[in-house]
Amino acid sequence: MIGKTGLLVLALTVAGCKADVDITTDKAPTAAEARTFVAAVEKDLAKKSVFAARTEWVNANFITEDTDAMAAKVSADMTALQVKYADEARKFNDLKLAPDLRRKLDMIKLGVNLPSPNNKKDNEELAKINASLGSLYSTGRDPKGRTLGQLTKIMATSRDPKELRAAWTGWRTISPVMRDKYARMVEIANKGAKELGYPDVGYMWRSNYDMPADDFRAEADRLWQQVKPLYVALQCHVRAKLNEKYGDKIVPLDKPIPADLLGNMWAQSWENIYDLVAPANSNIGYDLTDLLVKAGYDEKKMVKSGENFFTSLGFAPLPESFWQRSLITKPRDREVVCHASAWDIDNKDDIRIKMCTTITAEDFRTIHHELGHNFYQRAYKDQDFLFENGANGGFHEAIGDTIALSITPDYLKQIGLLDKVPSADGDLGLLMEKALEKVAFLPFGLMMDQWRWQVFDGELTPATYNEGWWKLREKYQGVRAPVARPADAFDPGAKFHIPYNVSYTRYFIAHILQFQFQKAACEMAGYQGPLHRCTIYNNKEVGKKFKAMLEMGASKPWPDALEAFTGVRKMDGSAVLEYFAPLKKWLDEQNKDRQCGW
Ligand code: X8Z
Ligand code: ZN
Image 1 (cartoon, rainbow, N blue to C red):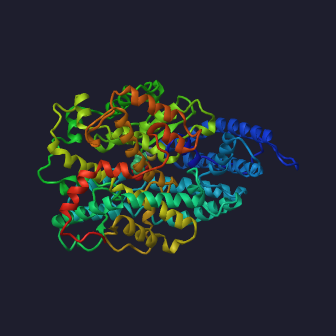
Image 2: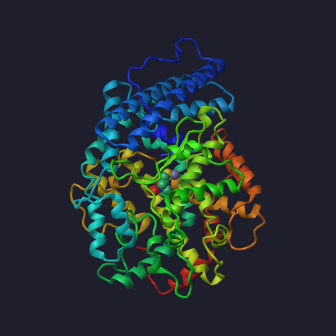
Image 3: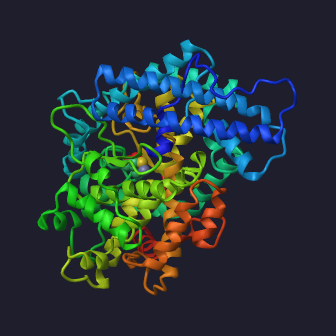
């Protein structure tokens, strides 16, 4: 969850709450009334969102029955309030209004992540279900009592197929109890969406990209088609190497890859199996996790290092309160939401992260990801409340990732983690590692919401939830369930963003955008070499333009923000293709006698 997006996700509902903004008149509304209405809504939401964020923060940092109940209450109230405003905003649908006003009214209508119907019973039930789904996930243990953190480490480091399978299936025992709750959540929220005049919740989610919902579906598909050949080549090579390692029986060459062999609990990023698929004769020359450990980095130093990157671009340092209030290491004596998140509590300076950090390269990158949210939040803090958000969800997710793309050998040398910049001999290795992280992610980033769109529009029913999930995993990722799934399985529930209802196409979009940003930034810097070696560390000129884009927040349609930084108005996968071009060439050679696809 991130800042206001997080608030809109979790904290919005008030049954029976008295109207703070009363626009009750029979006459056709006027533009002046629309402006008054929007100003009052902004004022009210800005005020109430602070308490909601604090409650949500306490719940996420101390999960108990009591904090779940408190968070559910606040969430119920905030949702009811938002729904009420969304409904009232429809009065102005037929008015011709200034673009900024129309934009704010659209945001009021579409800003409810899971709308509740306009009655107290449904509203409270929805909030309770959501609190319960969240804590089932965050306090989940496998049958041996292992936490997700412990299982994550096994998935990343074990090469024993039995151990991997046990960790993989073990984690998925947390989610069967979620299925009926989830189904009920879908039912209630869809009813809420219909009351607001939308066909279903998925439609609302797709409408948050400054274009009609159907156009966005087509846009996401267009981007996927652009990058798909690169993914298929990577999947083909990885499958072949896993076949060499584990044999025909475990990894047959004509089937999707078993999901437990890819180094990650959800097979969403594969960099942890780099050693199994690395190009021979292309030694990267260092291992970032080792460098961090050997240099004595602790969790806080990792975050300081992330902050230092942003300040090197000209951003102001994080406020002192960030350091006092953030949660950076996993507490030993209480349940917390360990999934990393960045928070904007007061829409001004009270920004924080919450992470159960480990000293690994993966978490080092995640820190940059989270700080990207925080620096975005600070950059747009002087916008009007409704514009205090990312240009779209994908932008918010792409900012820190763009910075993390600059964690190159050159950069590591500049900050003293590497003595010597390795020669270009290691470049294929560097590209492979990055592709395992980023290219492998693309179809996962897309299929998560393909599944939810099907759930919300009724194409999938509780009886077909799991089957539908695996159909999409196979179709997009070429990854399959490693064992037959039990009849009560609800495997989507074992991934954070499903029980927490965080839409996911944002990450797919972010994985396209961050390469567009990187390319534009490096061109701006006058950089001449290959994109994957380019770091914008210390570049104040690039920083200034980056900051200008962030300061726009959500005040303009996202193509304006994209244009401000890159000069183009369309999302485009060709920067991904350019970045990985040398690897693609190599993969095609490797794959030439292989039967790719699944
Ligand atoms: O959820 C996250 C961030 C918080 S916004 C840690 N990410 C997605 C995930 O973990 O599934 C970042 C990449 C994709
Ligand atoms: Zn994020």
